Image (cartoon, rainbow, N blue to C red; front, side, top):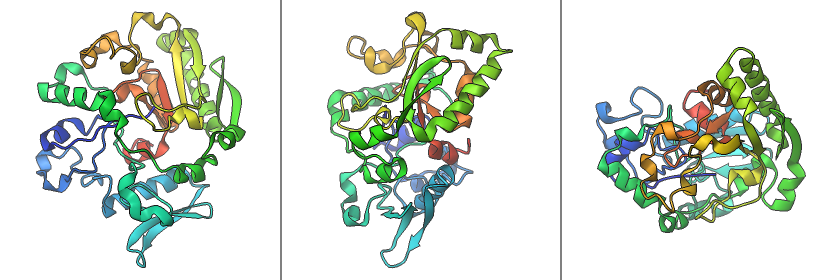
Length: 319
């Protein structure tokens, strides 16, 4: 599942931008106007990370090249069109303010969502730290009407990366595999990474009781599922076979996903971390080392969810 915020108030940007994983669109923000002490990305190449700008283009496109070296054959700056470009296989795309679009629609960038629209958080945010201003912003941007109004990705870039713009084509790339003793259907491209994740988790389980219990208490692992994100017309990463939901037996009487409880608990964002189910930290670390982000770090948390987004981890210096 993909999640994001459109944040317009500078003080909220400072408070939220580090951890609003999957939730935060910064396309209307200008980090250049913030002082160095208040800038959460000071001291890194992400200091001016506005999701759309030309300096961001170099960072993002180089991250994609590192993440997909067999597919991204070139990137650079085209003086003719005065924009950055990236080549996937034989297909060229323009930066187009972060939308990464085919040249034929590059002038229509405002209709689409930036391909990289958030920075993956370093850690889970404790709701005890929330100000009333943050809580109000979460309520606003998690509302179904707000979420339904947000733009979608243009799919041609993902089509080039994963060979599948439509369901019939994607399903030609879906394969079945065993993961931690449970069957799951995923995109063939992530099988090597997922196999390494499994190997490392099982090795960890040999000397870590918490990880052994985690493996023993998995009820099911859900992968490919052609669907849109709830409340939005956007494509779930499950629809590409790039995401996994690891469901625990009995849920251990804890909460797994914000949207499953938001209909009857308007204060869902204040649920303590102790009442959210979470995999062991060492399991999260293993997934991240192999290119998967964890939805438990998102402000709209989804603690059972992992998705393959190595470019986000590269941008954060985690891969």
